[in-house]
Image 1 (cartoon, one colour):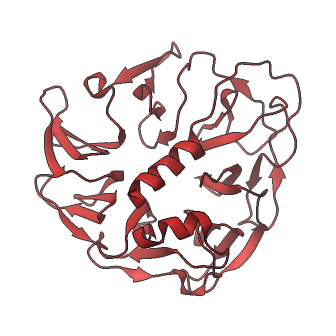
Image 2 (cartoon, rainbow, N blue to C red):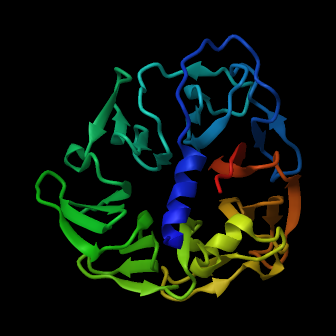
Length: 330
């Protein structure tokens, strides 16, 4: 059985939650979602008002709103750092796995229904890229040249925004994250990191020797990647807690070359998420949330581990750092 298949199954278990619609007049248990506005020194529980029995799946923040997808549906509140006033979005029927950043209106990804975008003014979630429904697709990029590129379970596709057919530009491999920085397209996945400097027509891989790249992200002009070794997939499921399997990398030249950043992190078997607030990096490990104020040279814990079987997912807006506890899958 492929290690990549195991990882994909883990992803599915960790992010697809049942959507039971219930009233929101009960208070949820504390620490489901927390907010820090001082670099992780202090934390505020902002989950009050969510229904009892709520478990978090994923979180997203923009300049105006905070969105929390849970086992009971999608909730939202004004993201101003004050006491949260959660309301349920009754228009979203699909289970969602991920928020897509960018744009004036939220976009979500559903494994059942593909990409959905909230229509302006009426609150209805409308499908986009309907011709790809049924395909396992993860992310996309609109380019200024009128093309759109999509990463998925069988490679990278490209087409004119309002024209078809889709053309495969990277064959046969899983690619998760996809974004563009300074005209360079970056995709992370089964072959490491792939980059294109010609609008997605041709691709070259970097970090190809490190295994499955589970996350790639741009933070303050630099690119970070989290990798998981293929040969360690079964050990990740069954191995000892202190076995180091994941790696954290940073690129200062748009993904061309990379440096290791995890040497000063504690020896843990999983690195789950990374983000940045101001000059501070925050990294979610199996044993808790860690912060670096010196570009990854040293790290200190700012939150202990979440509940057994859960890890921290992160979202930011300005100086606000939001943290949720979510199921760690495998």
